[in-house]
Length: 143
Image (cartoon, rainbow, N blue to C red):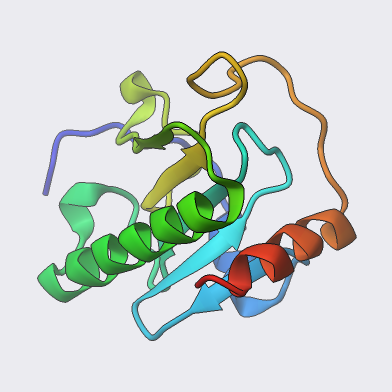
């Protein structure tokens, strides 16, 4: 048991994406982890690396899941670097409400930096599934 207060956001959106109950672009999937293309792109390109099993926070991961996630995080970063050629790559991960975790399913964000550096923390447009599918196809060539 840990002391983190996790967001009350159920049913879990990521579980619904992974099971196909809600449409979402999945760039790559393995037994313990997957790479998703979020509809709110905060970088060039912005991806999510998630566990396939519902695990609310970093503290809830099995060791093998942690390794699988880091392996896919590195592959996602390399795909962004070779495809988008950005001068920087941002990686972030939040655990608990006080750390601004919004979805109670463990995930990393990885994004190529925007013009001027960093990522876009302002309101960004929500892309269609066909637009996120195109991002996935572009990155899949280097994945």
